Length: 153
Image (cartoon, rainbow, N blue to C red; front, side):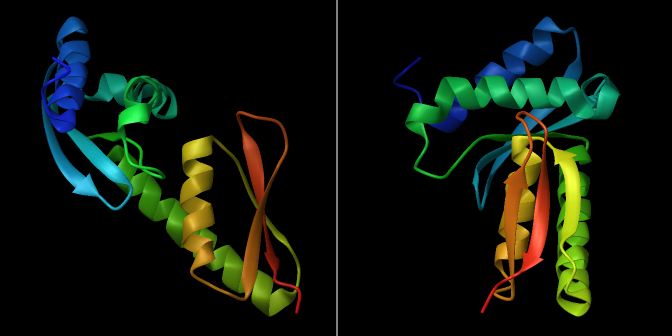
């Protein structure tokens, strides 16, 4: 199995978990900007989406733990189900950019969270595109808040 390409092994892991759960989901893969992205579609996917996607987050954490040493630096496996994570990412990016603009206009630091590590990464990356603001994670892991502040000149 170690001789198989990384993406094949990631899909096999996800497929094995889905099958063990007795679900009829189809796993496909594409390359996202942050690394391999597995997309699950089909009947029973809502099981992964309960409780704000806890099962989906757990499966993604397992995949990243198993394959982290084989992924290029700064890349990670993303697992989505029925567009849940894609929609959440879009919502987080929009909220982060909105709060960055609000911080610039008001001069008042903006707080977002609590967020898990994956969600914080999305916010940090989105806000990093605006040189006028900076982000800082505060609080206790695993759920920290992000402070968006105007960059000091």
